[in-house]
Image (cartoon, rainbow, N blue to C red; front, side):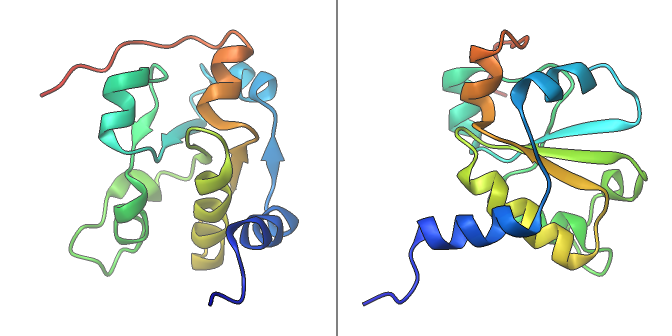
Length: 131
């Protein structure tokens, strides 16, 4: 039996990280000092679409892409930009933001309600083509 469930884990993450609304995130969409990070699975992007200009960093690889000592490191995470993470509904991105913040990446935040909230707030989306 597990001793801590996803609700408790997400609540703990939310207590440690900054969370912004989708409306706030939309205002940052064209800000060159900000990078939106989509942590959803590629199949979700194909099915639901993507936010223009958002970088796709699958949740399963995120820590490896952030760590300069990793063979999978991505220099995008050394840009000095503010990183705004999102997933489909805001749970995975809360956990991801907590993790990268604990790793030392900053400044970081996440979108409450994720991609669903972004769309509901009128944020621009595009179809994601399969490669």
